[in-house]
Length: 329
Length: 278
Image 1: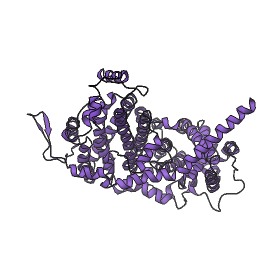
Image 2 (image 1 turned 90 degrees about the horizontal axis):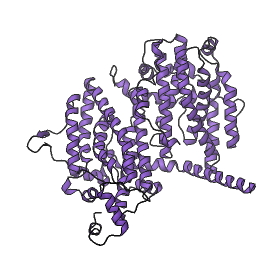
Image 3 (image 1 turned 30 degrees about the vertical axis):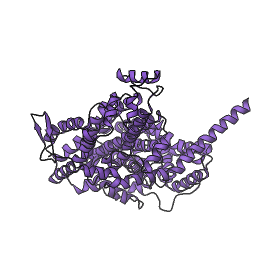
């Protein structure tokens, strides 16, 4: 993606369009859909925004697993609202991607045919209610660390979508924290359930920031284009820094015996992340990859007759209107 | 239009407090509690069904719309069950999670399974047209709490009604297949309509005091609304006797085979941890 051709573009004579784009980026301004942009910038954004949209849509599944079994009506209402927010986020993001010249149908086809990526964390299952807490606290927490800087992303429609999304995500994170806190103050079984969920989600959540900086192929160009603002490792550190005091308040243990603050480096020391597992899940061999895609495909295929009906109805209505206006003329 | 519906923090905060309507500590009479439980169970059982559509709807916009309708219904159920519980010192969750099937008071319509999208829409059409007439009339209830809940709910059910009507028009007027499915769904749903409009002893007593509305009095407005939709959609309203023999025991706790599994799923976690709070 970071093709040398793009980088060397600055060195040769720039076209007025290129100059304008470079100036906007240099001034930290927004690029809007009407503006000229390099193909690679467009492609990078389509990839990133559509992956983000897919993550929201696939991310509904592990949580919707508990809507029918939520243990109180209050929790059921909160969970339904949350999953619905995620559908809303997916919709804004698909719209933002559409401004770059790809259709939602194309993106949906890429997703259900297994050609698109989404956050691999959603390929883990949610066997217990405590997973609703751990997803909110850890997964949404990691997402916020990743996404708050994206509110300033150089592409206008993306940055603006992220502002709205981040507000809701921070609410989700607090709800997740609250679910775990309630469990930790409950019965032994509930405390065990909470700790077990934190144990299972902690490492996959740290992996959400992507590979270490020296192995992240797309990062440099994205940072140059003001799409990305902080490196993967910086964001991961920031996230852990946020978790540590919150874990203490709840009384859960973060499952890394090596985790401790290092005064000398000014960073947290932590155990090595198991990137083999990350690669495996990314390659489609996670515990629930096949199931997630299958559910999306089935919903899409089983709903085809409904979408066809809506399209056919709209066509007939338009025809009638045309006939009516023709009759008048 | 439906795609733009989201739940913001303020709305959710209200939802957390049980829709903000707690009747200022008013305690329901035994009859009013039974009545509120019927309405609350209708809303709860329907919400549970709509929740199952989330991630399975034909379009993402419908995941949002059906989820939103379900969320409104949970809000209604919470207010109503909270009020019902005041008569016996039980919470909304005691009533939702710790009653068995024979203690549920919902009508059979609400426990009929989702089926395909057309069946869900047919059920939504009947439910929302009925609830719109019901809550509209209950705004005048002599019971202040019931009146307040109805006044809030009727505005939301108005939107549910519009959602169902728009889909009936699209499915009936779309393709041959969608029309065939819509007609079948209407035929399958209609046997459950009669029960909604039965005047039994409880409602007769409560209606005399101005607390409840006699269901039979809602039927003309309901049928006029159905006819208006069906005329535009080119559908026929099933007339005459459509109900099965002995159908409609929901208000007395007799249910179809569908309620048991629905409750088993809904209650399983809460019942595995007696006394726990969540």
